[in-house]
Image (cartoon, rainbow, N blue to C red; front, side, top):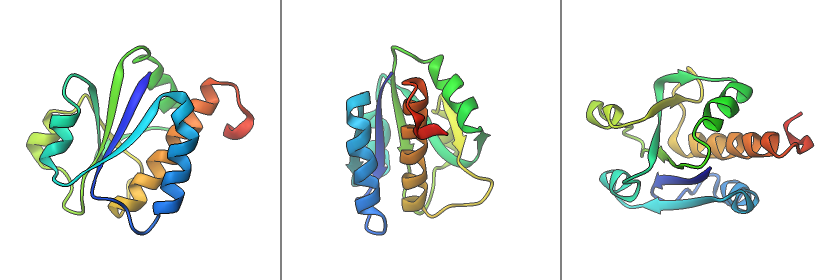
Length: 133
């Protein structure tokens, strides 16, 4: 699975940690990108499966997420992270998956960090790497 994580605006709070996970994920085919405006998320992810982060979305354990994403092996997947305003109803309808990272509402930069860590965990799980334990 080749994947793209797209977020609105560059993070300030957890920039170093997010970049560290981006570096670790590059060998697995994941790219991290940033856009200025929310509508650019959908333009940049055209033709890809779209995973929209939203607290109303589906909650997974890490193992469940790994199994779900395995079903998209060979496809291009974009994980979309909104700004502080979140996604609107029309945006949620355009998603192939609404993904909740927690039942709590997370600050968008924190959500990006949690997403990157979980994607790294999923990829290391697939690779049989001990990080997941």
